[in-house]
Image (cartoon, rainbow, N blue to C red; front, side, top):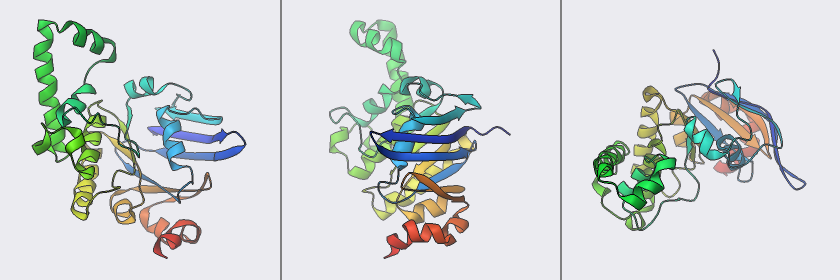
Length: 254
C-alpha cells in the first residue's frame, strides 16, 4: 500500500549548517503521526519542507507516490496539505468566522469577489459563513464565532487556526505545537479533536512537546535530534528507547 507521504533522504542546509540530514520516514492515510525532539532538532524545518515553505537541499518528498519536492505551498495546499504554525497567523481584527471563511475562498476568485461584490456572491458568502461556523463548532469554539480573533484567549486562537486549516479540506494536516499555551482542559479537548480527524479522512502530523498528548493520540512517533532521525515506532517503543530517553525524554523529565 502506497504511503500518503514519504520523505526519502531529505536534507536541508542553511549556509553551512545542516538543519536536516538524510531524514527518511512515511505517513499512512488516516493516521496520527508524532514528530518529537529537543528544541532545534529540525522539527519545524521538516514541516516547512513538507508544506513547501522551504525546499529540501537534497532528497525527495513524495505525496501519493509522486514527487512534490520544491512545489510552492499554494500548490501543495491544493493537493491536500494544510498546516498551522508555531506563531499564530490569524488576522486579529477579523472575527473567528471571517478568519476561517477566508480559507474557503478560491484564491483565483477571492480578489474579484471582494472588489466587485457581485450580487450572486452574497449567497456564497452566506454559505461560506455557515461552513466556517460549522468548522468552529467542530473544534469547540463556535460560541466565539463573532469575536475578533485578537480578543480570543491563546488556546481559542489556536483552535480557530486549526479550523482555518481544516477549511481547505486537507488530506494531511500538519500541526506545529498546537497545545502551546493551552490549559489542561483545552489540551484534553485538542486531543479529542485530533483523534476525530483520521476517521474523517484527515491524516495528522503532530509536532508537540506535551508528551501526554503525543503518547495518547499518536499511532507512530518519529524522533529527531540534531537534524537526524534517531528513532521511529509506536508510543510504547519510543517511551522506552534508550536513545530517545538520552536525547529528549530524559531531559524533559529532569
